[in-house]
Amino acid sequence: MTMPFIDLAAQQARIRNQLDSAIGRVLEHGRYIMGPEVKEFEEKLAAFCGAKHALGCANGTDALSLALMALGVKAGDAVFVPSFTFAATAEVVPFLGATPVFVDVLPDTFNMDVESLKRAIAFAKAEGLTPRCVIPVDLFGLSADYDAIIPVARENGLFVIDDAAQGFGASYHGRTVGALADITTTSFFPAKPLGCYGDGGALTTDNDEYAALISSLRNHGQGADRYDQQRIGMNSRLDTLQAAILIEKLAVFADEIEERQRVAERYSQGLKGRYGVPTVPEGLRSTWAQYTITTKSAAERDEVIAKTKDAGIPTAIYYPIPLHAQVAFRDFPRDPNGLPVSDGFAARVISLPMHPYLGAQVQDKIIEAIL
Ligand SMILES: *Cc1c(COP(=O)(O)O)cnc(C)c1O
Image (cartoon, rainbow, N blue to C red; front, side, top):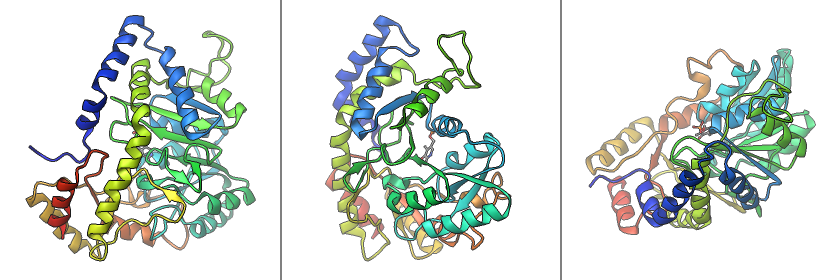
């Protein structure tokens, strides 16, 4: 048997009966688009993170687009994004005609460096752009430092969108990711900590006006009824079937986040000293979307890859090329001091199997192979 990187089958076995019933109910009522499960899931998702509103949509990338559209981001605006993240965080910005400006990350948490953000804002202004929005990412499941970022955003008139595709449900000084920024976006791609069985996404916010706009924008800019178009929108709804599945997965999500702490702790105990292990600042709790170690050099990473491959252990590199170096993004502006931390991580990070159902024995085998 091959070892899974993320064991979705173990999770499915745990809640299979509930999933079958939930899917069965949707097949019975047949309301596949915006059926009753969508509203039920949205209410439960909002309650889970403590936000006033939650709105489902088609995927995590659309969630980011919908957030930028609701905030009125347009051509000439600068949107600040980390370079060390998945492409979707930056991709939505030029798609809406605005300019992404790349910011470096911190060497300990993988998350946005507020000093780099300040330099990028000054640079964007000097280039004649209008600083409008910052999108910190909760990379690998750990919340970005909102207490440092939000004051800088406010001083500069920026909206804050939390890209919580990986960190939704994480804890930040007693609060839950989903209720920290003006708008939070997440993804239910199957491999995310809270995933469905296809594509799905959501936005959460405390702001009534943004919630009403997002509700309209995700459904063709609809107003009072289906044939009343108030604005240019898109078709980006969460399927009823996916919502029904997500209701059952959300019911075990808090427990799974707890189990992920156990797995992460065991890795860190076994690997610290030999490799760079993830830092979790005091008062924060990660969802551990990924457990990512850092080697001293690219050559050492190659050795780790070879050792795990021989032992039949799957690994992954998130991310091998920082966005500012990608063909699609390399002509966009960035922190004028460069992005050395992002460049360094791309050459030295490696992510290990991580999921709530990873047993201690299997984990010890992984640790042993890497040591
Ligand atoms: C997965 C991911 C997204 C995009 O989500 P999709 O549902 O795949 O569109 C956006 N940002 C980050 C950081 C992600 O990890």
